[in-house]
Image (cartoon, rainbow, N blue to C red):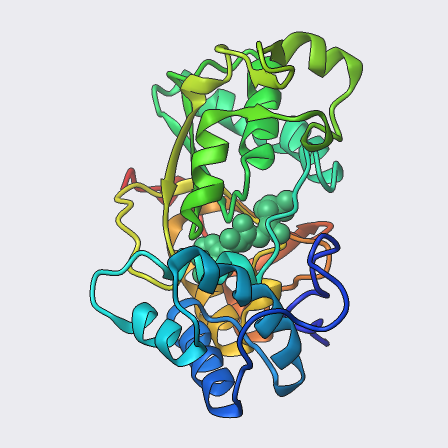
Length: 297
Ligand SMILES: C[S@@+](CC[C@H](N)C(=O)[O-])C[C@H]1O[C@@H](n2cnc3c(N)ncnc32)[C@H](O)[C@@H]1O
């Protein structure tokens, strides 16, 4: 199995031509790469120096620092809040509604019936959108649940991302037209309200399903309850193999037996995780184990 390059091509809106701002020494580049690997599992190879310089120049301006060494000192200072911005600058937050729509078909046909059974047995179901970016993924999940007649009192979605800016956009749930792609006319009519500034607001019906929070997937996870399904799509492409491998084991421990793990189109679990998961669809895996042994933690 091959993994794609960890960092995607430069953002199409990034300035083209010679990079603006301070120069990036080899030592500073290596320090940034080390921080990104240590703190967020990102794999940044040597060929990415120009990309790192271009993308971080904006962050240096934003925090009022004129050299990369100073920027590294800032990130490593205890209690600073810059790490999320660094990771955001080095990765992409691009998402859209019903991205990789086959997962939402699977959610409707395979997952929803299980969630209904949970409700009948008086159990609350939990779904995690890990790496939710601007929120299109968890809102798409909420649309499916709402259409299936599952109320928010029966199913809760936890939506997390390392980047505080995207989490706040997601929580606000107000999008300009270009961020609403992927929605049908019917979904727009049913789940989007017009806002005064010409943007579209996620309807009040969907909001109670979702709890948004910042969370670095490499940090300890505060969640106490296990999940029925975890969506972690187009996130681990940035991670080195060791980080990915550790994550499959952690997801395995956070899923109920027979719970589902959904990955992005170019992501796969590794051989070591095959004792935990079996393939049940396109980049969709089922947690092995006896569902009757389900524990409520
Ligand atoms: C391309 S978006 C994927 C959005 C959505 N899951 C989808 O498939 O459309 C990748 C997201 O992963 C987040 N991310 C990257 N590293 C992370 C980490 N260590 N912990 C949590 N989120 C991370 C980024 O901030 C970004 O919002």
